[in-house]
Length: 507
Image (cartoon, rainbow, N blue to C red; front, side, top):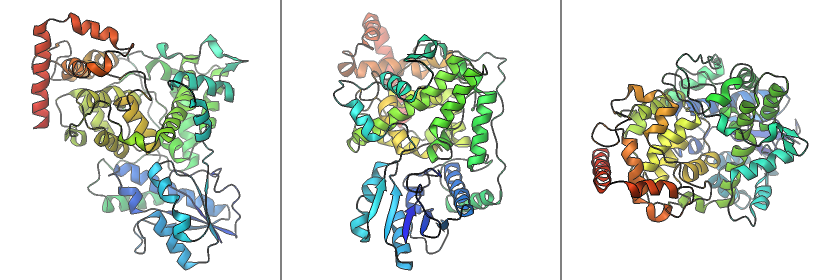
């Protein structure tokens, strides 16, 4: 009997390990295990989402005639690990070999590479070909390049997959419409309601389990509204294309208090666990453009996230692991503040983004990058602690996608492997892209002093502290010319304000 192990982020019928599965001959093993649910303290909604999606996928496999062995988290015999569950099955039945699609996280792949010797049967690790660029292909693309930049990778992917192309040229005459996608939201902007699935009996059972088994984990379990089947995930995609894609481009960077979902697609949950496939999402958006239902700047901006960003992030991860997880370019070491879990801070932008993360296991990319991430960078928070937080709190987070974004894009801890400069910004950026500052106890217009927005002086403090490593960066050098023109009095005030703020934060 061949055992085909399916992981919680591999919920695709087209999965390489399932492609040649024979009903009546093979057994498909799926398991909810403590080791995966608790290696970081995952958000309650994240655990519930994946457990419910796994159980629904198991039922779909059964309906197709497959024999499925499903190990529930609360089963008394559950060994608590994927290896333990494979070994347990081998003790119960005669197993000839084990087939599994390679996992998306280095720690798990490294463990699986020892399974054949430990189990005493052949273990076949197949490539995960649901992605548009394999690890080997990315390595070939990266070979010999002095620097790896998303824009050039994205263009090559567009050509390779014939996405938004007019022959060998990009539609609209340019590859990237990002400059059109930075509008702040007007006050009267109406945001459509997001898709909300009604929990069925399987999901209700999972919610009860998670509430009982993970009471101390971060986040609000209820209300629960995620899609947990491919059928509903496709509805989320269809609703995005019909109701949100048209304005996604204009307002993809905008933040509005009380509007956590904005015009984003909310499909990353389903893409990253396998309920949706990347190219079907790309083609759905492309059709909307050709049919006149969405403008090019919106469609290109959305497609860039999938064809470019998502594939580039994964390529960077596998190209640089395991050393990548240890990088700390700025030697940042400050402990993660308690308000990252509670949201209890006077900085309204951070409070809003963290409380929405707590409620939804979701925040859109500018909230993650330019509010929470920007503060993490300016405050010198320890990369490992920040990375673990991002991995734990977002329902779409797996290490392959989270680590390069946090270590590379947010914290610049990789020293420029991922991005060409740190994404540091003062309060002016947050004020331009949101209405958070209107409701804050700090003044975004004040540059120094106790009532000044902390982002204002922390921004300059960060640049001053790290000037030895950043002055030579051509994308940052002009900013240092502004610093050099400041009076000594202003520079001293910036340092004093920063020291005061950090003393209060550390206390």
